[in-house]
Length: 335
Image (cartoon, rainbow, N blue to C red; front, side, top):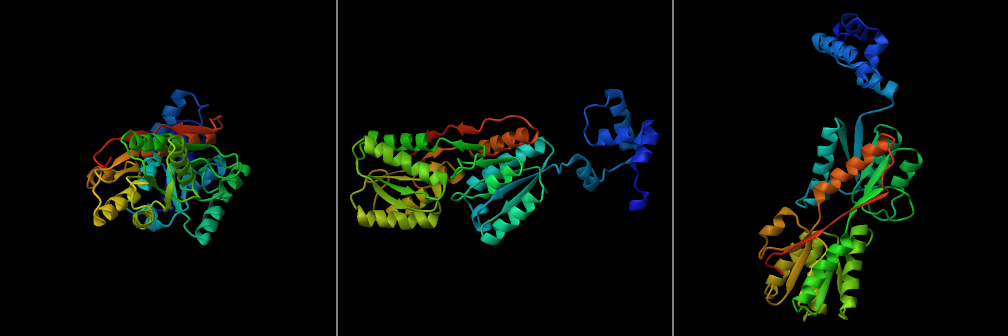
Protein backbone atom coordinates (compact mmCIF):
# COMPACT_ATOMS: atom_id res chain seq x y z
CA UNK A 1 0.00 0.00 0.00
CA UNK A 2 1.42 3.44 -0.94
CA UNK A 3 1.34 6.47 1.31
CA UNK A 4 -1.55 7.90 -0.70
CA UNK A 5 -3.60 4.75 -0.14
CA UNK A 6 -3.12 4.58 3.63
CA UNK A 7 -6.27 5.16 5.70
CA UNK A 8 -6.54 8.69 7.07
CA UNK A 9 -7.92 10.09 10.28
CA UNK A 10 -10.91 11.30 8.27
CA UNK A 11 -11.60 7.76 7.01
CA UNK A 12 -11.45 6.39 10.56
CA UNK A 13 -13.75 9.18 11.76
CA UNK A 14 -16.28 8.39 9.02
CA UNK A 15 -16.21 4.67 9.83
CA UNK A 16 -16.64 5.30 13.58
CA UNK A 17 -19.24 8.03 13.13
CA UNK A 18 -17.29 10.61 15.14
CA UNK A 19 -15.29 13.75 14.43
CA UNK A 20 -11.68 13.81 13.28
CA UNK A 21 -10.72 15.53 16.56
CA UNK A 22 -12.23 12.66 18.57
CA UNK A 23 -10.23 10.10 16.58
CA UNK A 24 -7.08 12.16 17.18
CA UNK A 25 -7.70 12.22 20.94
CA UNK A 26 -8.22 8.44 21.08
CA UNK A 27 -5.15 7.69 18.97
CA UNK A 28 -3.01 10.01 21.11
CA UNK A 29 -4.05 8.30 24.33
CA UNK A 30 -6.44 10.88 25.77
CA UNK A 31 -8.47 9.65 28.76
CA UNK A 32 -11.29 12.19 28.25
CA UNK A 33 -13.17 10.16 25.61
CA UNK A 34 -16.12 8.02 26.73
CA UNK A 35 -15.46 4.28 26.61
CA UNK A 36 -18.16 3.41 23.98
CA UNK A 37 -16.76 6.06 21.63
CA UNK A 38 -13.20 4.88 22.30
CA UNK A 39 -14.22 1.32 21.43
CA UNK A 40 -15.88 2.48 18.20
CA UNK A 41 -12.76 4.38 17.17
CA UNK A 42 -10.44 1.47 18.00
CA UNK A 43 -12.69 -0.88 16.05
CA UNK A 44 -12.55 1.43 13.02
CA UNK A 45 -8.77 1.70 13.36
CA UNK A 46 -8.46 -2.11 13.34
CA UNK A 47 -10.90 -2.59 10.43
CA UNK A 48 -9.17 -0.02 8.24
CA UNK A 49 -5.62 -0.86 9.30
CA UNK A 50 -4.92 2.74 10.25
CA UNK A 51 -1.33 3.43 11.38
CA UNK A 52 -0.71 6.73 13.24
CA UNK A 53 1.88 9.13 11.91
CA UNK A 54 4.28 9.05 14.85
CA UNK A 55 6.15 12.17 13.80
CA UNK A 56 2.92 14.16 13.58
CA UNK A 57 1.70 12.72 16.86
CA UNK A 58 4.90 13.78 18.59
CA UNK A 59 4.34 17.36 17.41
CA UNK A 60 0.86 17.32 18.95
CA UNK A 61 1.63 15.52 22.22
CA UNK A 62 5.20 16.76 22.73
CA UNK A 63 6.07 13.13 23.56
CA UNK A 64 8.39 10.75 21.75
CA UNK A 65 7.55 7.64 23.83
CA UNK A 66 11.32 7.02 23.93
CA UNK A 67 13.69 6.96 26.90
CA UNK A 68 17.47 7.23 26.60
CA UNK A 69 19.82 5.09 28.69
CA UNK A 70 23.21 6.80 28.63
CA UNK A 71 26.34 4.89 29.62
CA UNK A 72 29.57 6.93 29.58
CA UNK A 73 31.60 3.83 28.72
CA UNK A 74 33.21 2.32 25.63
CA UNK A 75 31.25 -0.39 23.82
CA UNK A 76 33.96 -2.92 24.69
CA UNK A 77 33.17 -2.39 28.39
CA UNK A 78 29.38 -2.36 28.08
CA UNK A 79 29.24 -5.53 25.97
CA UNK A 80 32.03 -7.44 27.73
CA UNK A 81 31.44 -10.38 30.06
CA UNK A 82 30.85 -7.97 32.91
CA UNK A 83 27.21 -8.77 33.55
CA UNK A 84 26.52 -5.58 35.49
CA UNK A 85 25.82 -3.49 32.38
CA UNK A 86 23.64 -6.13 30.64
CA UNK A 87 21.73 -6.57 33.90
CA UNK A 88 20.93 -2.85 34.10
CA UNK A 89 19.89 -2.83 30.44
CA UNK A 90 17.62 -5.82 31.05
CA UNK A 91 15.92 -4.15 34.00
CA UNK A 92 15.38 -0.91 32.07
CA UNK A 93 14.06 -2.80 29.04
CA UNK A 94 11.56 -4.78 31.13
CA UNK A 95 10.00 -1.66 32.59
CA UNK A 96 9.94 0.26 29.32
CA UNK A 97 8.36 -2.67 27.49
CA UNK A 98 5.64 -2.86 30.15
CA UNK A 99 5.04 0.88 29.69
CA UNK A 100 5.06 0.59 25.87
CA UNK A 101 8.09 2.87 25.60
CA UNK A 102 11.13 2.60 23.36
CA UNK A 103 14.68 2.29 24.73
CA UNK A 104 17.42 4.36 23.10
CA UNK A 105 20.82 3.07 24.26
CA UNK A 106 23.57 5.66 23.99
CA UNK A 107 27.26 5.06 24.75
CA UNK A 108 29.51 7.99 25.54
CA UNK A 109 32.95 6.54 26.09
CA UNK A 110 34.79 9.49 24.50
CA UNK A 111 34.50 13.31 24.53
CA UNK A 112 32.97 13.18 21.04
CA UNK A 113 30.45 10.59 22.18
CA UNK A 114 29.57 12.69 25.21
CA UNK A 115 28.94 15.72 22.99
CA UNK A 116 26.77 13.63 20.67
CA UNK A 117 24.66 12.46 23.61
CA UNK A 118 24.31 16.03 24.85
CA UNK A 119 23.12 17.27 21.44
CA UNK A 120 20.62 14.43 21.09
CA UNK A 121 19.13 14.63 24.58
CA UNK A 122 18.92 18.43 24.74
CA UNK A 123 17.23 18.29 21.33
CA UNK A 124 14.15 16.74 22.99
CA UNK A 125 14.38 13.52 21.00
CA UNK A 126 13.50 11.53 24.12
CA UNK A 127 11.04 11.99 26.99
CA UNK A 128 13.62 11.35 29.69
CA UNK A 129 17.18 10.20 30.30
CA UNK A 130 18.65 7.50 32.52
CA UNK A 131 22.37 7.58 33.34
CA UNK A 132 24.42 4.59 34.48
CA UNK A 133 28.15 4.34 35.25
CA UNK A 134 28.83 8.05 35.66
CA UNK A 135 32.45 9.13 36.06
CA UNK A 136 33.39 12.21 38.07
CA UNK A 137 31.09 15.19 38.49
CA UNK A 138 29.60 14.85 35.00
CA UNK A 139 27.62 18.08 34.39
CA UNK A 140 25.23 16.62 31.79
CA UNK A 141 22.57 15.16 34.17
CA UNK A 142 22.29 18.50 35.97
CA UNK A 143 22.19 20.40 32.67
CA UNK A 144 19.31 18.27 31.39
CA UNK A 145 17.41 18.56 34.67
CA UNK A 146 17.69 22.35 34.58
CA UNK A 147 16.23 22.27 31.06
CA UNK A 148 13.19 20.45 32.41
CA UNK A 149 14.11 17.05 30.98
CA UNK A 150 13.33 14.20 33.42
CA UNK A 151 16.59 12.59 34.59
CA UNK A 152 17.38 9.71 36.97
CA UNK A 153 20.89 8.36 37.55
CA UNK A 154 22.32 5.10 38.83
CA UNK A 155 24.45 5.84 41.87
CA UNK A 156 24.62 8.99 43.93
CA UNK A 157 25.89 11.67 41.53
CA UNK A 158 29.16 13.33 42.41
CA UNK A 159 29.01 17.10 42.53
CA UNK A 160 26.10 19.25 43.64
CA UNK A 161 23.54 18.64 40.87
CA UNK A 162 20.13 17.93 42.53
CA UNK A 163 19.33 14.90 40.35
CA UNK A 164 17.29 11.95 41.66
CA UNK A 165 19.13 8.64 41.84
CA UNK A 166 18.83 4.95 42.67
CA UNK A 167 21.80 3.25 44.31
CA UNK A 168 22.77 0.19 46.33
CA UNK A 169 24.18 0.05 49.85
CA UNK A 170 27.86 -0.15 48.91
CA UNK A 171 29.20 0.69 52.37
CA UNK A 172 26.91 -1.78 54.13
CA UNK A 173 27.77 -4.56 51.70
CA UNK A 174 31.51 -4.04 52.05
CA UNK A 175 31.24 -3.78 55.82
CA UNK A 176 29.56 -7.20 55.93
CA UNK A 177 32.25 -8.66 53.64
CA UNK A 178 35.24 -7.34 55.57
CA UNK A 179 33.65 -8.21 58.94
CA UNK A 180 33.27 -11.78 57.65
CA UNK A 181 37.00 -11.89 56.90
CA UNK A 182 37.83 -10.48 60.34
CA UNK A 183 35.48 -12.92 62.07
CA UNK A 184 37.27 -15.70 60.20
CA UNK A 185 40.55 -14.73 61.84
CA UNK A 186 42.08 -12.66 59.01
CA UNK A 187 44.26 -9.80 60.18
CA UNK A 188 46.16 -8.65 57.08
CA UNK A 189 43.20 -7.80 54.84
CA UNK A 190 43.88 -5.99 51.57
CA UNK A 191 41.46 -4.39 49.15
CA UNK A 192 41.51 -4.02 45.39
CA UNK A 193 39.53 -0.79 45.23
CA UNK A 194 37.46 0.44 42.32
CA UNK A 195 38.03 3.67 40.35
CA UNK A 196 37.94 6.73 42.57
CA UNK A 197 36.05 8.85 40.04
CA UNK A 198 32.93 6.68 40.49
CA UNK A 199 30.66 6.63 43.54
CA UNK A 200 30.73 2.81 43.63
CA UNK A 201 34.53 2.80 43.82
CA UNK A 202 34.61 5.59 46.38
CA UNK A 203 31.98 4.15 48.72
CA UNK A 204 33.31 0.58 48.56
CA UNK A 205 36.71 1.88 49.62
CA UNK A 206 35.07 3.86 52.43
CA UNK A 207 33.37 0.68 53.65
CA UNK A 208 36.70 -1.17 53.69
CA UNK A 209 38.59 1.63 55.46
CA UNK A 210 35.96 2.14 58.14
CA UNK A 211 35.75 -1.58 58.91
CA UNK A 212 39.47 -2.30 59.17
CA UNK A 213 39.96 0.88 61.20
CA UNK A 214 37.24 -0.14 63.66
CA UNK A 215 39.05 -3.48 64.11
CA UNK A 216 42.43 -1.80 64.59
CA UNK A 217 43.83 -3.37 61.41
CA UNK A 218 46.13 -1.75 58.80
CA UNK A 219 44.98 -0.52 55.39
CA UNK A 220 46.48 -2.47 52.47
CA UNK A 221 45.16 -0.82 49.29
CA UNK A 222 45.68 -1.11 45.55
CA UNK A 223 43.33 0.58 43.07
CA UNK A 224 41.85 -0.98 39.93
CA UNK A 225 39.10 -0.03 37.49
CA UNK A 226 36.66 -2.96 37.97
CA UNK A 227 38.24 -4.98 35.11
CA UNK A 228 40.05 -8.32 35.25
CA UNK A 229 43.25 -6.78 33.91
CA UNK A 230 43.36 -4.15 36.65
CA UNK A 231 42.54 -6.79 39.27
CA UNK A 232 45.49 -8.94 38.23
CA UNK A 233 47.87 -5.97 38.27
CA UNK A 234 46.59 -4.81 41.67
CA UNK A 235 46.91 -8.31 43.17
CA UNK A 236 50.51 -8.49 41.92
CA UNK A 237 51.29 -5.16 43.63
CA UNK A 238 49.67 -6.25 46.88
CA UNK A 239 51.63 -9.51 46.97
CA UNK A 240 54.86 -7.61 46.35
CA UNK A 241 54.16 -4.91 48.95
CA UNK A 242 52.39 -7.08 51.53
CA UNK A 243 53.45 -10.72 51.09
CA UNK A 244 51.93 -11.64 54.45
CA UNK A 245 48.36 -10.63 53.50
CA UNK A 246 45.74 -13.23 54.41
CA UNK A 247 42.51 -11.71 53.07
CA UNK A 248 41.39 -9.72 50.02
CA UNK A 249 38.23 -7.76 49.37
CA UNK A 250 37.95 -6.87 45.67
CA UNK A 251 35.46 -4.16 44.72
CA UNK A 252 34.17 -6.14 41.72
CA UNK A 253 33.81 -9.81 40.89
CA UNK A 254 35.93 -9.41 37.77
CA UNK A 255 38.82 -8.07 39.84
CA UNK A 256 38.25 -10.82 42.41
CA UNK A 257 38.35 -13.46 39.66
CA UNK A 258 41.70 -12.09 38.50
CA UNK A 259 42.94 -12.05 42.10
CA UNK A 260 42.10 -15.76 42.46
CA UNK A 261 44.14 -16.59 39.36
CA UNK A 262 47.07 -14.42 40.46
CA UNK A 263 47.12 -15.95 43.94
CA UNK A 264 47.05 -19.45 42.48
CA UNK A 265 49.96 -18.60 40.16
CA UNK A 266 51.88 -17.29 43.19
CA UNK A 267 51.36 -20.56 45.04
CA UNK A 268 48.82 -19.16 47.53
CA UNK A 269 45.90 -21.40 48.44
CA UNK A 270 42.38 -19.93 48.62
CA UNK A 271 40.94 -19.82 51.23
CA UNK A 272 43.57 -21.62 53.35
CA UNK A 273 46.29 -18.97 52.86
CA UNK A 274 44.25 -16.03 51.55
CA UNK A 275 40.46 -15.62 51.71
CA UNK A 276 38.89 -13.62 48.85
CA UNK A 277 35.56 -11.78 48.58
CA UNK A 278 34.20 -9.88 45.57
CA UNK A 279 31.29 -7.55 44.89
CA UNK A 280 28.40 -7.85 42.35
CA UNK A 281 27.53 -11.58 42.28
CA UNK A 282 27.68 -11.83 38.51
CA UNK A 283 26.78 -15.26 37.11
CA UNK A 284 30.37 -16.43 36.74
CA UNK A 285 31.08 -15.84 40.46
CA UNK A 286 29.62 -19.26 41.25
CA UNK A 287 31.95 -20.95 38.72
CA UNK A 288 35.36 -19.57 39.68
CA UNK A 289 37.92 -21.86 41.30
CA UNK A 290 37.08 -21.90 44.15
CA UNK A 291 33.54 -20.43 43.88
CA UNK A 292 33.58 -16.79 44.93
CA UNK A 293 32.09 -15.40 48.12
CA UNK A 294 30.69 -12.03 47.07
CA UNK A 295 28.36 -9.16 47.86
CA UNK A 296 25.23 -9.46 45.74
CA UNK A 297 23.77 -6.25 44.42
CA UNK A 298 20.29 -6.36 42.77
CA UNK A 299 21.48 -5.32 39.32
CA UNK A 300 18.30 -5.96 37.32
CA UNK A 301 16.17 -4.42 40.06
CA UNK A 302 18.40 -1.34 39.96
CA UNK A 303 17.57 -0.85 36.28
CA UNK A 304 13.88 -1.42 36.92
CA UNK A 305 13.66 1.02 39.84
CA UNK A 306 15.53 3.71 37.90
CA UNK A 307 13.04 3.37 35.07
CA UNK A 308 10.02 3.38 37.36
CA UNK A 309 11.25 6.59 38.95
CA UNK A 310 11.89 8.22 35.57
CA UNK A 311 8.46 7.31 34.17
CA UNK A 312 6.78 8.75 37.26
CA UNK A 313 8.87 11.92 36.94
CA UNK A 314 8.00 12.23 33.24
CA UNK A 315 4.31 11.89 34.14
CA UNK A 316 4.61 14.90 36.44
CA UNK A 317 4.58 12.95 39.70
CA UNK A 318 6.72 13.75 42.72
CA UNK A 319 9.34 11.09 43.41
CA UNK A 320 11.80 10.33 46.16
CA UNK A 321 15.13 12.08 45.49
CA UNK A 322 17.10 8.98 46.54
CA UNK A 323 16.25 5.26 46.56
CA UNK A 324 18.65 2.83 48.23
CA UNK A 325 18.56 -0.90 47.50
CA UNK A 326 19.99 -3.51 49.90
CA UNK A 327 22.95 -5.81 49.29
CA UNK A 328 23.53 -9.36 50.55
CA UNK A 329 26.68 -11.32 51.33
CA UNK A 330 26.67 -14.63 49.43
CA UNK A 331 28.84 -17.29 51.07
CA UNK A 332 30.92 -19.62 48.86
CA UNK A 333 34.22 -21.47 49.18
CA UNK A 334 36.67 -18.59 48.58
CA UNK A 335 36.05 -17.19 52.08
